[in-house]
Every structure is written in structure tokens, then in C-alpha cells.
Length: 216
Ligand SMILES: N[C@@H](CCC(=O)N[C@@H](CS)C(=O)NCC(=O)O)C(=O)O
Image (cartoon, rainbow, N blue to C red; front, side, top):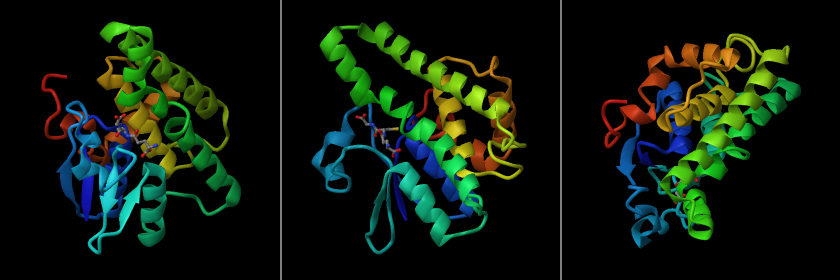
């Protein structure tokens, strides 16, 4: 399997964790998002949307969109499961996952922050402020949900890891990359710290990938 990846990509981080949890080996193929490699024809022939991750199976089948990939991996390699068995549990885990995948992360990706700058000339500082705003709003929403819902346990849903934890951890990592903190969100922090104590999460972190800046 080949995983098209970049150190900072939060969507790819989610998939790297899923692959580690499932014990699936993969060959990383690096796509330099800052250098615009996602727009070059070599990569567009793999994923015409010009975004990562893409996961290419040995027979050439291309999987794309992190949530679809995580669910596919879960169906093909059911252990350990990333979704609960009951429909309400599955709905809650998917909903918590989508808070990152659909509602926060898409607002801060390079193509969006660059477009905001192109239209409104916000500059580097303005782009960082934009990103920080959406990460903070996402953290507040997670904290409110996770601290009040009975479904929350040691992890986002119950006492075992689910897809929601992979998404939450990616949100927390993005917060950190952009010099924010999760310290004032105790439930989020408790769950993220527990996840990152597991090397299958920790080794997949953005700042531990080749090409990441040192000294963070
Ligand atoms: N919804 C997609 C998001 C994919 C995405 O936007 N990936 C980012 C990196 S995390 C990317 O490739 N961005 C390139 C760009 O914005 O130019 C997923 O979850 O897979």
C-alpha cells in the first residue's frame, strides 16, 4: 500500500493512526503541500481533487477522503473496531468525527487560507488568526459535547478508541502546529493525552514525520 502524505496534513494524520491501529504497513509517498506538489499532474492523476491523503492498494485501487478511508479500513480489517456496534453509538462517533472532518478542518486547509488572503489581503498574520479562530471554535464545541454527553468515557465514545478519537487528536495536533493549546479544554485534553500515550497515535503525529520543522 502507498500512502500519499505530508508531515502537516491532519487528514493524513487520521489515516496514519488508523493504519497503525490496524497494524497495516504502508509505503509513504511525500506530497509537498507548501511547494504546491498537490497541483502537479503526477499527483492529480492519483487524486484529481489535489488533496491528500490518497491510499493506493497493491492492485492499484485508489482510496481518498480520510473518513471514507478510515471506514474502509475498518470494514476490511475489523480489529480493533473503530466504530461501535449499536446504531446510536455509530451515529455519535460519526457525528463527533464530522465535527473535524466536515466542519473545522476544511476551513483551515491551504487552499482556503490562501483564497482568503487572495481576496482580502489578510497577510500571514491574518491567515494564522483565521486558522486559530476555527481551531478554537472546534475545541469549544468538542469540550461542550464531550463533557456533557453520557457516551463519553475514557475516550470520546466509551472506553475504547473509536474513529472520533482519531479525528479529535488530529484537531488537537493542528491546534499545536499553529501554536494554540488544548490546556483550557479539560475533557479534550484528558482524551488526547490518553491517545497520545499510545505509540500508534504518537508516532503518526505531524511533528514526528519526515520534513516537519524541528524544535516544536
Ligand atoms: N476532507 C478531506 C480533506 C483533504 C484535504 O483538504 N487535505 C489537505 C491536507 S490535510 C490538502 O491536501 N490540502 C491541499 C490544499 O489545500 O491545497 C479528507 O478528510 O481527506
